Length: 108
Image 1 (spheres, helix red, strand yellow):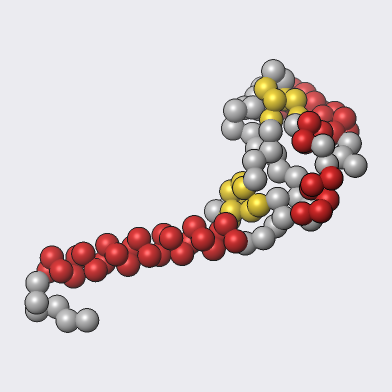
Image 2 (image 1 turned 90 degrees about the vertical axis):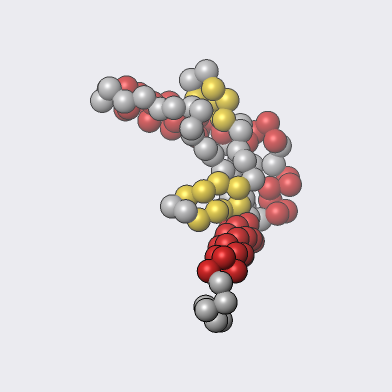
């Protein structure tokens, strides 16, 4: 079972720490993700996954980006691989278009 009260208190402590150093947490840019197995995540109440940060309610997305890597709630790499493959195919199509524009003197 998720104990969101403990995490809410932790976020409150972080907010206080930031305030004491003249920093401010931006709730609109803050992301939260809960990791677990598919079975575990299905058994958790969706309302327990939300957290309060000041006046902003943070709802966990299915996928977050951390250091350029897409992570989903089950820590699978499916989303990341799909995105990288899509980007590679896009660049290959652009190269093919450039080859056609350069003319016949360029051979593959």
